[in-house]
Length: 357
Image: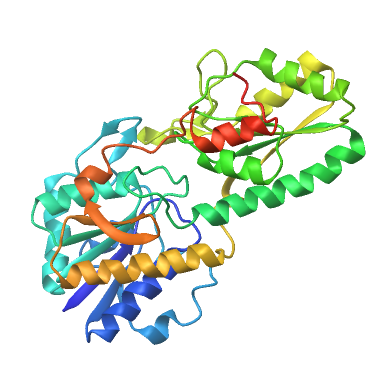
């Protein structure tokens, strides 16, 4: 068999581990692997691809990003807004299929988030031999309890909070850290808890500035001279609006700026000197954690196994320490969001974390 692999959507630590897993597992079965560059775009004639063997993936586990490149724009974009899906034009699908057929690809492993897997499912429904691997740094696909890249992003948030704590203490300030999390606040929640944040603001839990200010004032009355606030980029202000950078030219809007808004309002309501920092793409880059490396390899190996079994239209998933699979169609239908009564939120509240509600 000859299998193909491509990465779509945003990058995150652990993508190279998936490539390493697919290539290694395929080679052990005597198969060839072809890597397509820049996502589905690499399928368009004349094709932009490279043959991969285990020697080509030696040493890439420690590298962030992806050796194949990726994109969240182009001819195959499927998500054009919250809940909005655009089908890939049939002419584009047919052109890409010619490349697949000419290279005699028996299975195509698509590593991507809900948008990329929505495209993958459309192609599967047209007869493509698709295997999906979930890639979402926000950890927000309900069909899998964890995705690679998330642990690395949380580690980056914790490192940022540890650094902000020392400068906040020195100047007796409130420090606000804006982190990734468009629809789901898992990075903010886990990173905030591990980084000892005093306030965590999430897309799923409505907050008011007054509640946040009251909490910070109580802390000051108790003798605390500084505080840390973590806010997910997708958290809506009390008026229900998102902070946006631009409309991303027809795709999903680019979020950013809620951290500045929160910092300004906290300063006004508490009188405390307040500063804001945005981590942004720092969360996507750098060396993946051991957990993300291992999870990525396991996902890649399972993708090759599914290909060998002819289980197309399936997405690799992780539940209860076990790597299995679920139908792609089911995987992209529902996001995994933070619930206000979840155990993790309850634990955070028990140790004094304020969610602004």
